[in-house]
Each structure stands twice: as structure tokens, then as C-alpha cells.
Length: 138
Image (cartoon, rainbow, N blue to C red; front, side, top):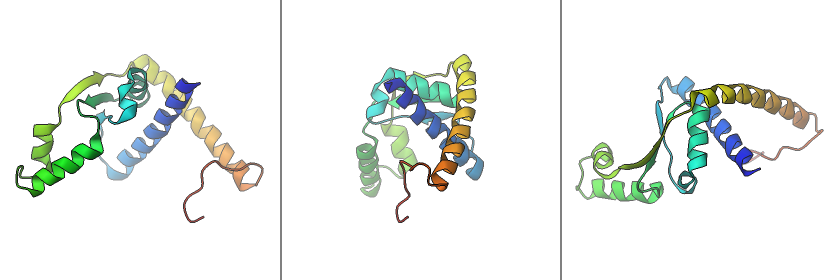
């Protein structure tokens, strides 16, 4: 059951990532995965397999705190800019490469997920069911 929740989170993340790439016209080849979820090898591998991208897990996984420290270091003049701070301070602990066989399977699953989601939204619009999510202010 927990694996299916991880897979769902990765599929939704991949859909969002694909939209970002489409809107920004920026190709993303690798993903830095940090914070608590990055501690689990299975979740990291699922993310690699679903996205088809290399996953990098930094040695310091508390990304928010590290980002704040890097910003402060730039402000204090220790580093010239965030790019320099990134180069000096971020080191990677683990790397996960996608299993292309699994990536192909997840592409099919993602297409089916998108069809099911679209159908579920129609049920919500007809007041047959209630959505679990509601945008703020609605």
C-alpha cells in the first residue's frame, strides 16, 4: 500500500515536471531529491524510474536550512553569488539511475492515471463525488 502512495506521488511529480519543461522550454536531465523522503532508497529509485531521470541525493538533505545558510553566506560576502555557494557547499551522497524497463511501464501507468483523473474530475463537476483537494479561496 505504501509503495502505491510513493508511486502516485512520483507520477504526479512527473506530470508537473513535464509541464514545467513544456512551459519553460528547459530540459531537465537530473533531479536533486532532498529532505525526509530522500532517505528511502525505494522512493528514490521509483522517482528515477517514473521520471526517467537521474536522481541525486545530497549529503546535506535539509535543503531549506542549507539554502538559508547559503543565502546568508552570499549576503555576508563569503561567496560572490548563489552559484558559487552551490558549487562549494553541495556535495552528493547517492545517485539513482532509471531502470528503462520500469520507465516504459510507468509511462503506460501514467497515461492511465491521467485518464482516471480526468474522469474523476467529471464526477466531481457533476456532484457525484467530492474531490479530496480544493484550491484555496474556492
